[in-house]
Length: 508
Image (cartoon, rainbow, N blue to C red; front, side, top):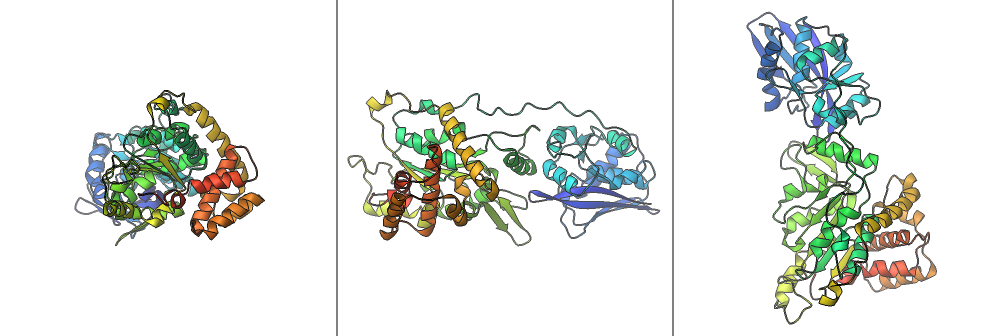
C-alpha cells in the first residue's frame, strides 16, 4: 500500500515542503529512507520502529520504502519522525489516511512514542499556513510558538497515539498555558543613572538608540566605554510584532529560542574579540548563522574593536550596508537578515593612553599600525564617533544627566515620529533610509545647506558619509520634535562623523 504525509525541512531560516511517501510491499523485512536524507533522518528508522511498537501499534514485517520528495532537496533534522510513523500506520491500514494530505506533521519521536520539539517550528508553522494546509501537528513544547502564526489551527500531541487520534478525526491534547511575555522595560539590569561625568557620551548614546545608528566609542582604559555600551539595551524600545517574529524565526531555527511567548526585548550580542569570521558572519556548516544574524533587529557590541582580526572586521561591510549577509559555499548558499545596530569600543592606541602625553609611550609606527586595523571603508559605515574622556574626581560626584527610563521615553517618542514618517517606505528608523528616502523626507534649511556644502568642499565626507550624516541630523531633529533639519543638527552630526572626529588626532 502507498501513503503520503506532509511535513517540512529547513533551508536556512525558511521551511520547504516535503512529501513523505511510504510504500509497503511483500519481501524481506527492510526499512529504507531515500531522498537526500542526512544522518539524523536516516537514524529515524530505529526511532520510528521502537516508537510504533512501544505505543501499541504493529510494525509491518515487510519491505518498507520511505521517499522524501523532492529528492534533490537536502533533508535535515529529526522533524520527519512523526510523519514517517503516521505514514507507515496509514500505509499498513492501522489508521485512516485521508487527513494526512491536509495536516502538517512535525516532530521527533522518542523510543516510547513521546513527541519532542524540533528546531524551526515557527518557520514550519508559517510555511504550513502559506501552503494552505488545515493544521500543523506538533509537540506541546513548541505549540505556543506555532500559535503566533495567525489563523493557523495547531494540533498539540504529547504522544504518537495523540497524533493518531487527530488523524482519525479526534481532538488533540491540551494547549500548554501561555508563558508570560517579557516585560516592555527591563526589571533589573544596568541603568544610565550609574554613569557619572559622561554627559556628552550619554547624549550620543541616546541619539544612537533613537535612530539605530552604528557607533564607535573611543577612549582610554577605564573611561566607561564598556559601561556605556552595556546600558544601551535599557534605553531601546521594545520590538514591534513584525520585528519580534523575525527575531523568533532566527532563534527558533538555531535552537536558541526559550519559551513560546512573543519576544519584546531586542537581542544584544557581545562576542569576544577572538571570534572567527565564520563565527561572526556564519557559514561554518550548512544552516550555521553567525553573531550578525543573531543580532538582527538588535545590537551587536564589539568590545576592544582593534583586537579583532582584520578579515573578520572587513566581513562586516556587507551586513552593515545592506542589512543582510550572503553565505556562499561549495554546495550551498543562503541569504540571512542581519539588520543590526553596531556599537563598538576601542582604545585610541596600543597602550590605550593616546592624548595623555605623560602616560602614552607609543611610537608613531605603533600608532600607524593601530590605525590600520580599522580600515577607512569600515569607519565610513559608522555614523557616530564618541570620544569618552577621562572623568575627574569632581565630575564623579555630579548628578547623572538621564536615567534609563527617561532616556527610553525620549527614544520611544523619536522612533514613533520616524515610524509615522516612514510607514509607507517599509522601514522603521532613520538609519535604514536610502538616498531616495532622504531626498523625500529630509529638507535642509539655508544654514544647513551651507554647512553641508562647506564640508563637501573640504573633502571631509564621502558620498556615503554625507548620507549617514544626514540620517543622524534627521534623528537629532526627531529627538527635538522638529520637522525640519537645521544648521544646528547638521553641525552636530558632522562633529560626530569618524572621518571628521579622527582628523588631527594621534590615533584611530
